[in-house]
Structure formats: structure tokens, C-alpha cells
Figure (tube, rainbow, N blue to C red):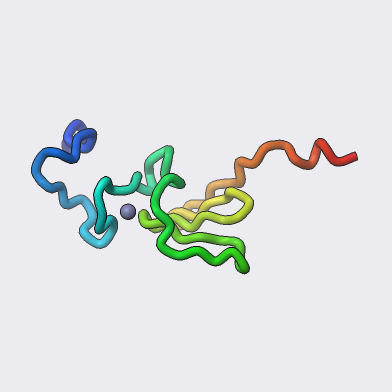
Length: 84
Ligand SMILES: [Zn+2]
């Protein structure tokens, strides 16, 4: 594994996951910390979720479901504390 090459996409085309990103610059992977910066390929506000290009399901409450089944808890700010 050569992770140093992933910083620049200028070098030869990498094929990590051909089924993933079809555009440039490619989206952050689902393992990346900024995974929710990926493009939305499907948006369902009525159901409260979006599907990101990297396979992450992003929910309205900022919770996330990763392609490998891992669940990320919502990281919203303390909205409840403001309500009396
Ligand atoms: Zn993408």
C-alpha cells in the first residue's frame, strides 16, 4: 500500500475502487474524516437522508452509515439545551 500517492491526483490514474468516483477531483473516501464532503448522488429530504458518492448514507441529524455497516453517531451541536 502506498498512501503517499493519494495526496496528488496528478500522477498516474489510481484505481482504488473503480465503482466509486467517476469525477475529478474525487470525493473523500468513506474512511476519510471529511467523508461527508463527498458529492451527493441521491437526496431524499422527505426521508431525511442522502447517499454520498463514496457510499456513505448521510442522515438529516448528521448521523452516518458507512458502506461497511459502521454507524457514526450524530454530531450535532447541543440544540436541546437551549430549549427550556
Ligand atoms: Zn465522487
